Structures are given as structure tokens and as C-alpha cells.
Length: 333
Image 1 (cartoon, rainbow, N blue to C red):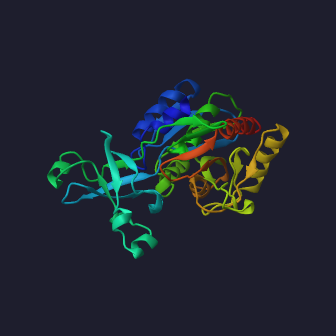
Image 2: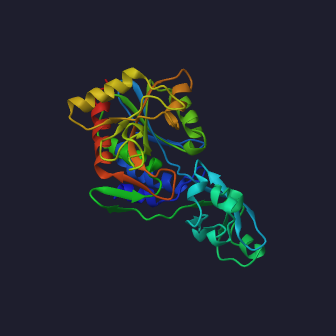
Image 3: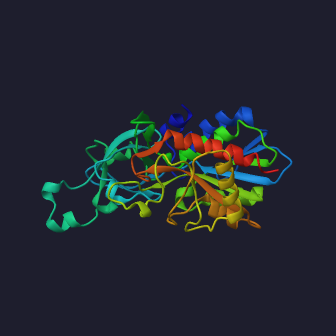
């Protein structure tokens, strides 16, 4: 399964090589031109005579970077992207290109003071234990600047649900690959960007080079359909279809484009929902502000427990995101 292959690859911000190699092979039969720019973005061109359109997905996932060695052989580390430090203790990670197994260690609850139990642990309170007995042994195995990622196995479970890591944004990458299998009148650039999780850095460069008229970001987005959250506060819900964003911290999305996407969904009887939150941001903000700017929108697959070691999504939401975007792109002439 394409999505499983993408999610199983390691590719935190700045280290997207494995994901990039998979995508380049997958899209070869469907595009006219491909290049990888100096930052590592994939810019794939499917030529057409209509408006110039970027459809974007980012290759990077949240992860960690190794920042130092402790005397006992454990590692100091920090986040690559927005990982909540509440979710990191006792998680298994893989360190570096050689996928060295490690465990994120923290003081056990038996030894925590009452104050310890009330506060959130910081990265300084944690370490990565790779089973080493000394700093010297660890230095021979791990270099400063190496990355670490969660190794969560992708699988299907329940009634049409998927679980795994890096759904933000391998969901978007998988949708974009599927879009390239169809033909369109618009001049389509499929852009798989780097370093979104640390500030949309790749998208600024790619959009500046392409200079699109329209930019659509494909994302895996926050989902809050949990029993302790009131319905009106749920940003998106699993199984209700792709989410069309209205605004976030980096963009007020172009009403004309968002309404056109919604119109297609309603005419083609494709389920959709509005993203009822403005938290976060994505590559659409960079596309919006690059060069002379572009009209932008974001369409997302809702994902529970995002930016953690595991996310959950609906297979039907993923499939309906593909359907919606294919039909929308066919209307751009």
C-alpha cells in the first residue's frame, strides 16, 4: 500500500531523503518533468495550457535531533517540529540512518516528588537510552546532529481506520501522488516540500520558483473528536470527509477557491467538512506570500493524535480527499 510505504519511511525535517526517493520513483510514469531543488524539494511538472497551479504536500515529519552526550552513555536531544513534550516519555525511537533503537527515559513515578507529578517534563528532564554504558561508547555509535523518529508500525484496524506515524503529512503526499495519475487542463506543479514542520521553509523556495496562480496545500490535520471535547470545539471529525480550511495562523484562505472546492464536493456528492479551528499553519501560507503571491486553499485528511508517536485516520476520508481534488483540478481551465 502506497500510504504504508510512505509512513514507514523515516523523514524528519531536514532529513527527508528516504521519503524523497520513494516519491520520485512513484511519480515517474505520470509527469513530464521533475527536478529536486537545492533545498531538496521535489518539483514535478504535468504540463497544461490553463492556469499555473501548485498542489503541495510536505515530506517531513516531526522528530528529534541529537544535541549532546551524557556521561552514562545516554543522549541529549530536542524536537524537530512541534512535538508536545507531554507525549514523549517512555517512547521507542530509532536514531540516525542506521536506525539504532532507543528509549526516551524519564524519572519513574515512584521517585517523582509531588511537584514533579504536577509539572510537564521538559526535554532536559529526558534522555534517549540506546543501551550504551559510557559516553565514549555512544560517541562511536551516534553523531551530534543525527535524527531520531518514532518507529510506529502502520496498520488497519477497527471499521475502516488506519494507524501509524507521520500522517502529517504523508497523507498529503499519498493524495498528491494519486492526483498525478489523472490528466488536467491546468498547468500542474506537484510540489513535495521539505522542512514544513520547522517553518514552511521549503515551500517558500518552491513557490518563488514556480510563481503559481493558485496553490493548494494537502495536509493531515488536527482532529479532536474525543468524548471529553464538546462537539462545537472539535476542529474536524473522523469519517466526515476531507476538511476544507477557512483560516489558520499563516493564511486567510482565498474564499473564491475554498467555495469552488466546496461546490465540487456538493455537486459530486463527495462528503466534506469545514475545519473549525484556526490553530497551526502550513505551506499554503508560504505559497500565499511568495513572489507576487497566489490564491490559496488547504484540503486535509483529519488525523487524531497528530504530532505524536501515532495517529489515526479514516481510509474513506483519505479516498474522498483524492476524489475531491481530482474533480476540483478538472474544473480549472
